[in-house]
Image (cartoon, rainbow, N blue to C red; front, side, top):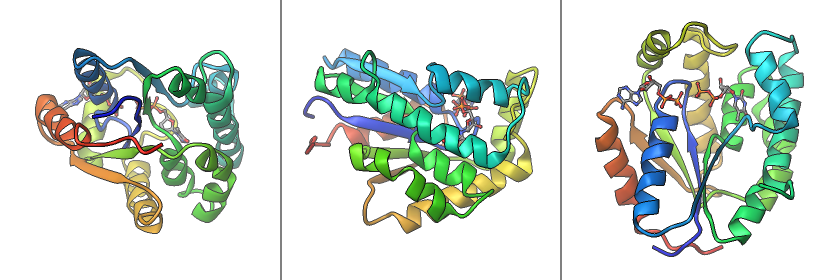
Length: 209
Ligand code: ADP
Ligand code: TYD
């Protein structure tokens, strides 16, 4: 495998993204790669506003939230200190827990998906992932995991919404399959088994950026 891939993890809340980001980061480091693991919403100024909306500290319309994610993503790519483009330039393999497919799936349930895709076209033009890894899970299973693991639920964490989001993910993958590399792995297995599946897939990649 050549250095310096850009990998995005996708899936509904509780599907196991954070767990897999960590396992993949460890595996890449073991094999000599410099790795920068990051996530959206980011820890930057726009990401902080978004987190306050999800925690119900401030209120905002779904369309406003979609717009905030557009800005947060551009900052995630472009900011001069730890922006993804800079990290790739510096030779890091970058793994992000969520990228623009999250916007297509989560906001495509509240407004036309084509609008969301168009609104994110600057980010897509700057950087498409070498692979979007989608962890596929039944919403019932992820709801159960979320309820066991947390004391409160975030804005989008209801069974009805996660079911809609899952359907929107599949719609977005179908719509963009000619432009995007998408790898789907089954999330209802032991974490190590999923990690091995992902490693088997990406260890063969050549970075053609
Ligand atoms: P996400 O980042 O997608 O929300 P997490 O990795 O935080 O998901 O996992 C959500 C919860 O499910 C956590 O409590 C985690 O320990 C658990 N979990 C993660 N992967 C698995 C798995 N493959 N099988 C069972 N439980 C899992
Ligand atoms: P995250 O912290 O990844 O939550 P989890 O670990 O439970 O998956 O994401 C927080 C929420 O942000 C999640 O409900 C999905 C939502 N989200 C959007 O609505 N639009 C976006 O563009 C992104 C990146 C996330």
